[in-house]
Length: 219
Image 1 (spheres, rainbow, N blue to C red):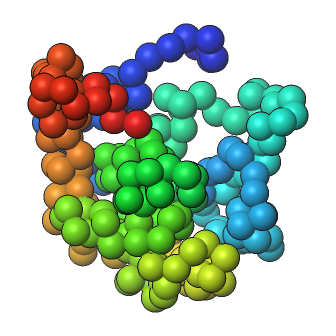
Image 2 (cartoon, rainbow, N blue to C red):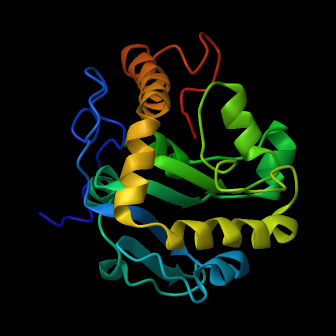
């Protein structure tokens, strides 16, 4: 059912294979780029975008105005689309106040869904977000597609990310599938790392993220 008032866990065995860590191999779409909220950077990314056999969706939600949620899939349906895509193009949340407070690039469920669904993520976000993921063992495909300037602010690296999207656009679904198969070990490693994190949180809900006294929420 399409019940948008229902609240359920995102990272559950209903949406992901957290125990068996199975990855769907035969996928329908070359890539997915699905964004709800609008900003100037996302406007630029979606300008004249043509990804071919892909899910390409930009709802242009504005927090200050009425949003028609029926124009965007439910979260469970969105996750199914990720499971059916080889590459995920992720436009991450970037709140400068959060980054200054935590001293680390902000990330959200957007990147975690991309990793856990077995896609090859390319990620656009706060300075050093790709480096931080790589430092903990998570693999992204930004470098593979020639992305430059991860350490920079969005305004200074938007053109490089747009070039990444253009390179993805030039590839056929079969070419991307071949790349996915060649990198399945890295994709599986991503799934394993995030599954370990989620399974720890499910079985240790009273201990916080890193033990007694730490926050009890991931985001």
